Image (cartoon, rainbow, N blue to C red; front, side):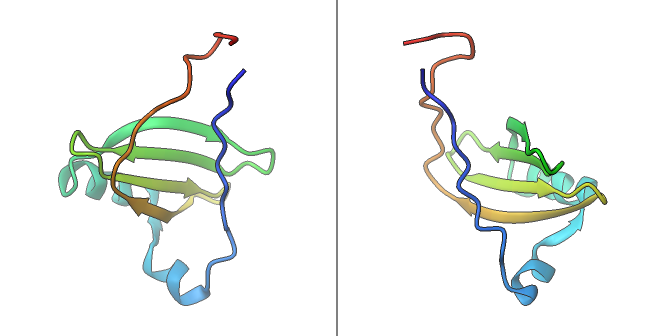
Length: 92
């Protein structure tokens, strides 16, 4: 069975975190309108951190994490997004 793993380094410096944190709707609006990205993957951590990966047709991607208090932060972004995992429910 294949698993999608999110290795997150959630201990970003305060300066970095402040630059990339805002309310979720504002960040999602920017991702969809400015960068033409749409939500591709969602996950929830045991601590209540809501993880989303957005991507564009051109392969750009953004990892967005929303804390239980509603603050969302961009933790990573890049190019060459590709889903390689098997669909859920498929053992192999």
